[in-house]
Image (cartoon, rainbow over all chains, first blue to last red; front, side, top):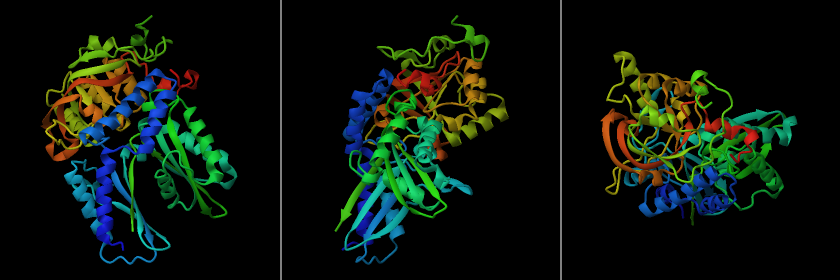
Length: 278
Length: 207
């Protein structure tokens, strides 16, 4: 039985872990890259990132000073019935986790009309989807501003096809990837609608590096990773062969006239955690 | 002709950015123009001494004060700015996690600040052409620190003293004392730009 308070607790605990513990799949990918990187400067940057993860875990200090905006995705069992105000409960959990964890308050009240700090890192951005059965899966991502700033949504013509998607990804990396704290984890969404495609791209960042997604997209993911790593942007943007650790593609149905593409850049300290509630 | 770049904004081709030196070059802050002029894009450095944290909101205020008074406030002349907004201090340490934020957002303010006496900046990611030219004109250096390594970098900060704008929270102007803080020279006083050479496919990314 899932309720608002168990979801809020899951969010609070996920924030605490994600802020200071690097995802194991990302840590392993950084260690592999430190061995394969061709640039000496790139290897020095990667070694610094590997050591940073060890220090963050040991000192219980955040991996990055930008402890992010909070994105919560809840996959809710269709048999669950939630009472109460889930948004308020989650925001209260965010406030508690950020105050107690000495995390940075990085949210302003309004993007344009009131850029004063909200003081408690709220609101969280919550997305709720349904799945059959009971229980819930809660994914929490603390998304840095620098890597989101380097992300793009573009509406291609269907004729642009796979080449168009590849160009969109490479162009995003060349344009701003060096400021997004490479080596990157790159989420690519293709399909759905203008408003939904960015969410697909963000969801792709949750998938552990090395695990398989849609087998039909596996070859494309490898091709995109090669293309991104051929840019030479490198670790820290300072040159090298490791610009990205992985590219994850998520696709969806769309309108006959459309080919929506979103590229969400995840940084080398990408922070997310998942909690399964039963 | 090592000094050619001082005459023209982009001088003739010089030797490419040096591959990372065996040992980082130690730079004592506040840095003299002579010490800064000896640095080359691509050099690994370790910075020791005071720097002042300043990011988006801080820059808007500093430049407003500069325009009003005609000089830099808070004794910033000859000092270095660090584009950073730390997490709150905890566990008896002087600062929480602290690492570089994206320098590009400060580009619009930087030429005026360098002209007024800021001798160096620390951040992440490439700068505008205007900033590169200002580094040549003013003999200033832009250092790139590694984004995403804020727990490690925090261990290289030994003190933090609030200077101004406490109401800005993480964006307050704070004097941080660095101790062997690792960074790379990204734009040197000759105008050589490490990010531009990294982007150049001719380098194959292998610098």
